[in-house]
Amino acid sequence: MTGPKHSCGVIGLYSTKDDAAADIFKALRIIQHRGQEGAGISVFNGTKVVTAKGPGLVHDAIKKEDLGKLNGMCGIGHARYPSAQTKGEKNAEPIEVEMTHGTVAMAHNGNITNYQELKKKYLDAGWSFLTDSDSELISRVTAKYLVQNNDPIKAIRSMMSEIEGAYCLTVLYNNKVFGVRDPYGFRPLCLGRIHDKGYILASESAAIDIFRGEFVRDVMPGEIIEITADGFKSHPSPTPCQTAHCMFEWIYFARPDSIINGREVYEVRRNVGEILAKECPADVDLIMPVPDSGRAHALGYALGSKIRYEEGFMKNRFVDRTFILSDQKQREAGVTLKLNPIRSTVKGKRVLIVDDSVVRGTTMPRIIRMLRDAGAKEVHVRIGCPPIIAPCYYGVDMKSRDQFIALKYSLEETREQIGADSLGYISISGLVKAIGKPENDLCLACLNSRYPTPIPGETHRFQSTLNHSFE
Ligand code: SF4
Image 1: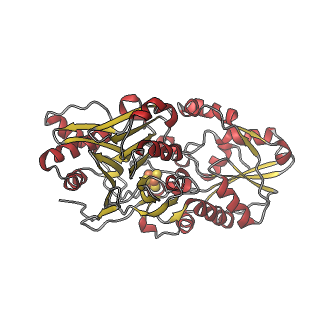
Image 2: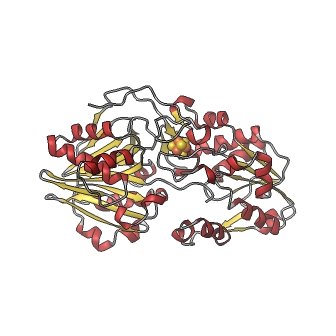
Image 3: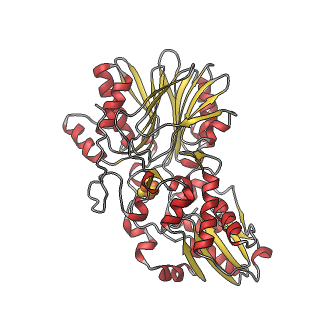
């Protein structure tokens, strides 16, 4: 609840029955945590692509009566979290573009780093845009190439050669469904098989589990996967890819029961806690999580330190999420609506709370004050993510340096600011070890300012030498 916000979730599905929309709806509800501003589903009904989308949570955005009209064997879905620049209903996805050959609809998770430059190029060429969303640009550029050659793989490859940054896409082109992952694999996308039904593409593997489906594999960086009722076809990247998986997917975004790039999220978080206990020990009576995403980190810390684990907060699950997310002040006030300490657990105790990450550090002082008011003798804080010091350009809502508490203050000053008795973060090397992948396979740019791709206007960067031209 103190961390940055998600960057959307996507689904693609090909069924052997006429009920793709109902299954996409279920899958979207499973990845709802990735975006709550809006949701949408597009299906091919045998004649044309039809879409239902709207604001709010999946079950509010797609009404029962609309779902009933979405009859078709294949389709895509989207759960949306907006960036500051792209709030509002007009940016809801999937985005459809109609052409002479048919309709292409797209759902996107990520952020295109050369969006402004490309948008200007196409505005200069006489195009006009209906939204502020990079997803519209991607759809329109793909449609441009589809008009030229009516070959979806070629068209998607041509589009990929123009855009830079982070993108996982599900694409519906008439009766064809594709999953596309950028050459760095920043955001997750995986493939599953639903027994007796067909194939599913999803941002997280938990969406496959809901059908008791079989996790087939992650979509590889730079790969396009085409799914049909009978199976799937891989179109691998024609050039080598340099992987840069977002570390935040494991630390904060993804559900603990999802497997991201071959590593289970829960296991990684528990590893983080265990390593954190070794790196930043504390003499305390009990370990507590900040629910929910800090839970596995805290459990790991308790295992690593051999100190008792307790649930010290009651979480109110019925607070209106959109109210809390709508602005920073409301988010801070929302902490008291959302969390309440369990007095008998904390009274007279030296407690250590473990949270997944700290960006601004504005909600943590309230949490600590609540614990002291409830009688905690000492409150120590441990964070399962190293200090965030640089903006994210790959789809996570952390855009400017002035918001980062770790850039404004030293560790000791931060401790004072939030009112903790002690404060410790996991190290970058500890985090990499917990994830269990080579450092070179990860994006750690918000921790070390080394960006895997060129970023317009960003001076601290490490530019890949690989050429991801797909043409
Ligand atoms: Fe993830 Fe940080 Fe890289 Fe953004 S900059 S993709 S949040 S690791």
